[in-house]
Amino acid sequence: MQQLSLCPGSFALEKEMGEPETDNQYAKWGSLIAAYIEAVRTKRHNKPSMNLNLQEMADACLAKANQAIEDIRGHIGAGAYNPADEFWSVEIRLWGNTQLGHRYSGRFDLGVLNKTAGIGIIVDDKSGWGDIPPASENLQLRTLAVLAYKHWRVNNIFVVLNQPSKGKPSVAHYGLSELIAAEGEIESYVNAAYTPGADRRPSAKACKFCSAKIFCKEAMEVFTKTATGEIAGDWALALDQLEVTELVAKDLKAKAKQALAANPKAIPGWHLKEGYERTSITDPKGAFGRLSDTITSEDFMSCCTVKIGELATAFQKRAGIRNKKVARTGLEDRLSGLLDKKKSEPSLERVGSSEKEAE
Ligand code: SF4
Image (cartoon, rainbow, N blue to C red; front, side, top):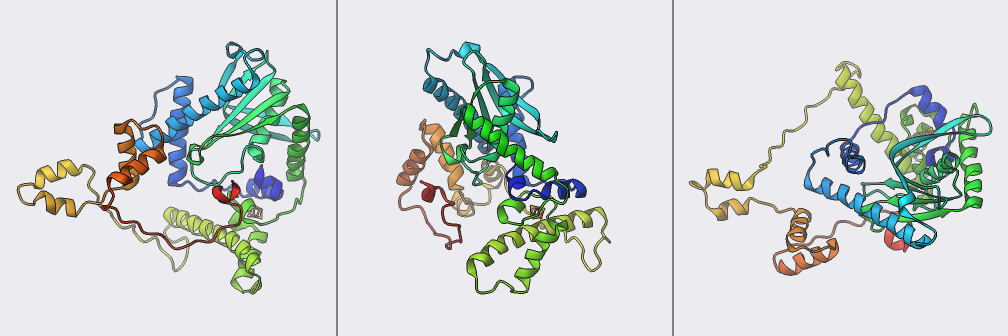
């Protein structure tokens, strides 16, 4: 919905090109975490197996969602809200029609409906680290609030953006007047997207998840302008445009790789170079056991690198510390004099986009 609000023409182009989204490792981890969360919430199937870090993220999503729901109940007050009247649903897609008859839909991770109290709660779990607009500005959640309002016929909807990597869930409340305004806003984006010849407006935010980037004349024009230095001198504009060109370039490479994988002769002058094979030891203790007749433990340890993040997680668990930051500080205190800290190069960031600045 954010993409449609910024670039209404992307809807028709994506449909026309029918390009599937490029799959990546993060998307696969996200799907695993979502399957784990769904299994716990519905108890319909077994939890998928996954590494400790992913499992911790899934457990954090579950715990923080429950806490957010508990906080909303508390905010409404025991007299006006009885949890026994709640109906919980998981991974449901809701459909709506605009006044012009255009169809749109949204799928929520968790919905809690309390008809008696006239309240609905929508939870959207985000297991990644990416910057996502807070609940009050989030158009995906606003769409879900509108759809829930239409289906559930309650006049109070709470939306919860549950992203444990960013701390506490972000919560927004839509009362009746806000729901009516949101319905008008969201449906205006949908109507605009269905309008033949709708505008295409490239920007980093609009193009980020658009699957039609490499077929889009407007995005390619930005690419060409950057390449020919047409915007030289205007740094802010150049950086804005560069974000679009980087997105297009990344997508172009991914699609070229797919084409060459399907047909090695697809692109004259190019071929897919075999990836490097990396060998790693999955069981250091077992490996040393097999080599200890030849090398000393000092030899072995001098070849080992310890991942500080994973060590902090293990330390937190063993020491029974609830807070991740406290565990990390405790670990670093214990390892004082044995740590080497290096600061990476400063990076470019838009003003207002980091959490610190937002606070
Ligand atoms: S690439 Fe960008 S400008 Fe082109 S259709 Fe997609 S979102 Fe719109």
